[in-house]
Length: 178
Image 1 (cartoon, rainbow, N blue to C red):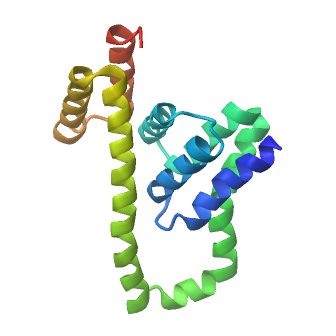
Image 2 (cartoon, helix red, strand yellow):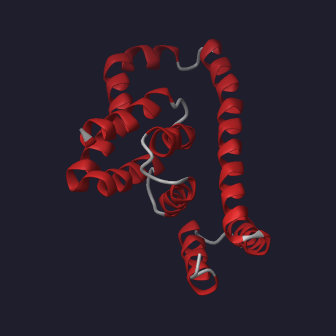
């Protein structure tokens, strides 16, 4: 039963998540946090952070982690396959049509409409992550992590992997009791 749940939990968000991995993150959160209760919002935010820090597509890295956590190696395979299956099926079925209409004004207009929706979903997820962090570790630690993370990522252009590792070390040293 867990393998079927892993398949559905990853297939549906990736089927509906037009725009790639980042578009599926809030949809996947609904499945693994709200629907199945496998993780808390805070745990899910940590999965997103780790997945974002590693090279490669975020959706497949998250799927492998979630699948392995819930169903071992077979679970990781099932979740990863379910993540790429919608794209694989669509590419196989619609490759000719996609190549014919990729420059169509209607397709470009659809993309312009979908992008703000994805931005709103990501914004809501960010708010949830912030609220959980704020209520869990307090305003001082949350502010420090946000400011230092921003400076390291956006100003200093340090790799997200290093920033995530630094945040983990900060948490281990200063927040060990939480």
